[in-house]
Image 1 (cartoon, one colour):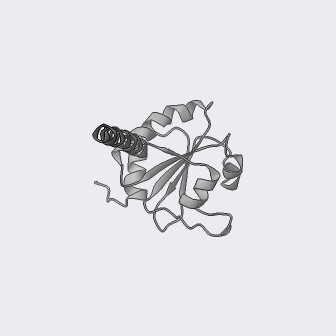
Image 2 (cartoon, one colour; image 1 turned 135 degrees about the horizontal axis):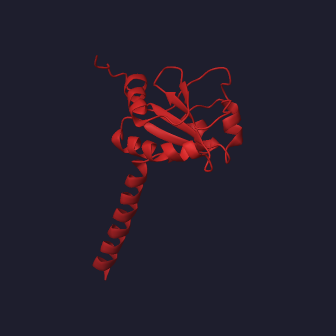
Image 3 (tube, rainbow, N blue to C red; image 1 turned 90 degrees about the horizontal axis):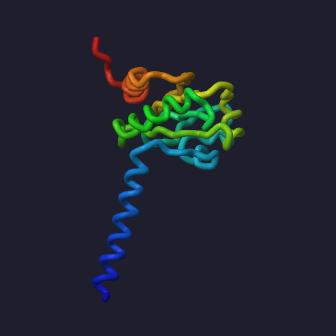
Length: 148
């Protein structure tokens, strides 16, 4: 009986670990509280940007009803998998986090914040094609040299 229980516990653990690993490979939803811990605590330092992450990130400010936001959502999921371990791709629902959206002056969606390490974030708006995302990730976030 102990052996069966051990296998059942091991199976449950592996299933939970597998689900977390898959979730980690995609985009990550942020609340205001998580944003303050993982990205930047703009409340404690309102006049200074200090990125708190250990890898560069993209923050997608979106709404569930937004057509262009729906258009780039699968692209961002693909990029999260392609660049797994190199960058984070966060999502902020502007309908659920209006205070966070207001703090960054989000007036149109999708608005994307590209946050490199040790530098100021860069902003882009609209439904960008995957090639533009990849170029921005490679040059702005990962500082790879472009081929000419």
